[in-house]
Image (cartoon, rainbow, N blue to C red; front, top):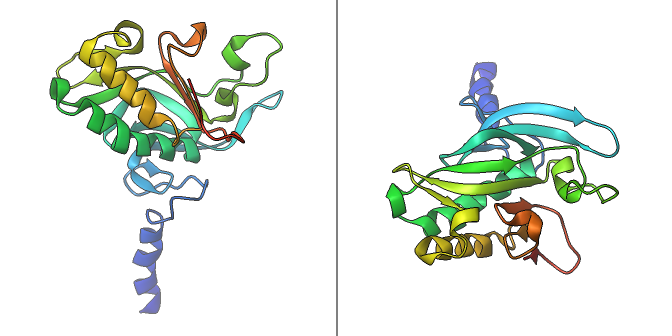
Length: 201
């Protein structure tokens, strides 16, 4: 009788693991990282050469009900940070424009490469599963808010600047069109730790 009572508790534990652990956790509904609103699959170790790789990788398809344009490889810390930004930054900033947010156009996620693909540069946070690049916000009416086309335009531009601002802090690095020539068409978000606090440009 005691065994029968323990089984549902064990199963429930799969989806109730705390949010601070980096251990990827799958719920019965295909969620990862102990959060039922982060959908995807556990990949596990992603080995690579030259310092790249992810110890405990997940492939994320949606966060907080917002679909990613391509399934994105990352660690759970980055997935949880992205989900927090969707809830507290993205959704309120876009509001009811175009019927609300339906998706994020992902420009890049995990890749074993140097920063900005520059020879001899340090490894990018993308090479560690700590980063995701966002090129556009997809709206329910089929319209897009793109970093390339709308950064310096009216209402859409103000929304993008608000998104950049709200990402700064939750993410350790936030780069946009005013940072350098490499980020004219997307936002770069990563969870790196900097001694002086978040680096946002």
